[in-house]
Image (cartoon, rainbow, N blue to C red; front, side):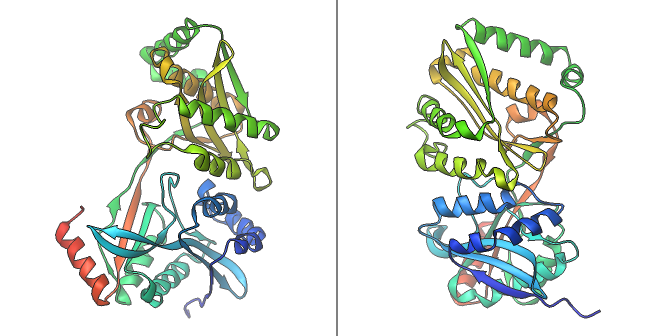
Length: 363
């Protein structure tokens, strides 16, 4: 059988996201690996918010005019071991939980090989290719790495990424709690009683797009009073980060649903849980609480109330806890594994960086 021939368009401007929107959504529905981070809404919002000092390289792959693959990349300056480098890679900053290529069924190998060939042909504009937080089980990965090697690109062994705990929603809340054991069940009760001792407690479930602007203003206010305030710039979303979250989280036309909780103590917001639903998966993004209420364990109480609603609401098949901390693992030991890839080409500077990275090992 002759190899599939794909046409490649390299899109470089924000308005091209909009022109591709309908086709993107159609392709998304065919990919069994679809998730929130592959939606046009999430990618457009990220580029709109954070793309100002970077060069977009959105690869649109077609077969006979039909869109069969999408790979959102960018070129940006960075440093590798103290040396300047031009990077071609996936979108990356603290908001990017995972990345992937969107591929129509039956086109995995062809898309993977065409993307690798693009990396080779565009070598004049990059020194290092960094593909970060890719699901380790992605079916296209072996074909991509093999073809990259066949055409002369250099690579390093895939490095483990940040794992994500996944909680399947396959039973009732009561059954889940009972399976976790007596200690787990007692801790839930203790936590809510502890919060109640602080004053009059109200748990508000916020899903109405009409109140989103007011809700996100509350989130930003609680963040300023949390551990993520001025003392932690890496974790602090700030006005720009919250604007990004609001832009994609309110894209209801794309099947995205805000699903948030605000906890008030004596009518004052003291904790929030910010999550988003898409394709029957609930994605947790932020849990914040007023630092002055730390001893009340209000953050844990808010998360518990949210997870109970996920089990009881019938809207989801899984809860993505978006991390693998001890707290996340306390809810579910099931994890999704991720890897990051580094590629180089054979021009002198890139080849030198590859040699240095090999010498440094995983550093």
